[in-house]
Image 1 (cartoon, helix red, strand yellow):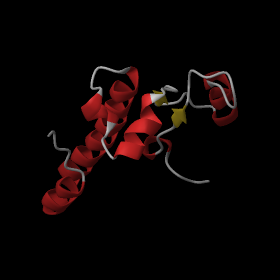
Image 2 (image 1 turned 180 degrees about the vertical axis):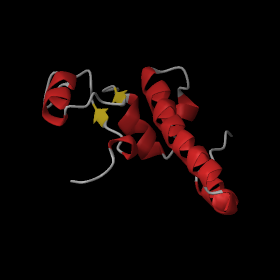
Image 3 (image 1 turned 90 degrees about the horizontal axis):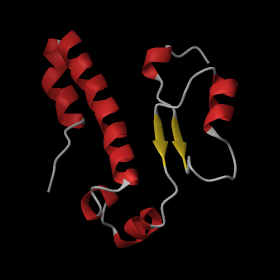
Image 4 (image 1 turned 90 degrees about the vertical axis):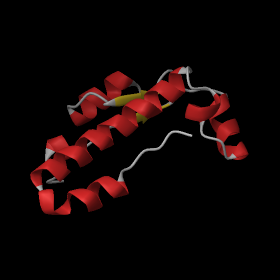
Length: 101
């Protein structure tokens, strides 16, 4: 599609279930390994329903770890962009600020 490969992140949801697309399918189709594997975990839809992020309710779960990995990839991208565009740094970092409650 013409996007630079370094600006694309591949996230595989329900990566440990045996339905749908597998990690190997993604790699062979896209010629790119998934950057983040989100496991199928019963508590994920429950956290969405409750309006409480799983990274807060179950911070040690594999799903929470995967979501933190995904967030760190975007934070790295934003801080890299901020370093390359110092005049826009406050705006870029403000839009990607991650907070811990």
